[in-house]
Length: 106
Image (cartoon, rainbow, N blue to C red; front, side, top):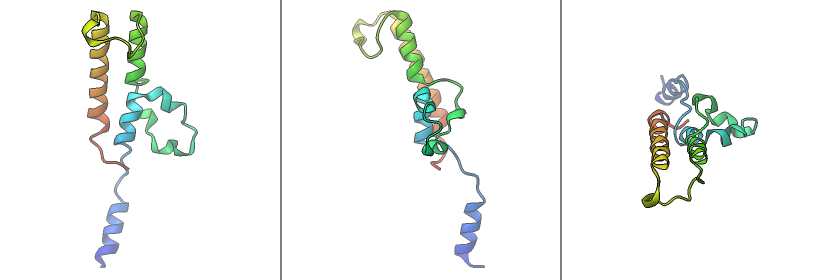
């Protein structure tokens, strides 16, 4: 059997992984990407893979509850609530990286 044909048949029988940088972006900013789920490129985005609405959306909400605007607080002057928001965002992004970046790009 031709090696080229055998390679094509073998590779085409492998399942496609929907992960990589696009999945990482969907995890970080999920809600913004979910708004585009009916666009032609939406099949490339694994939007239902992540239960959270996105790490950045969670951080913005956390800052808002604390009475601050996300991205405007200097690290040196950050109160404990903002430090907790930053820690939560870091944990969420680490979970995104552990989930989304390990698989190959489709």
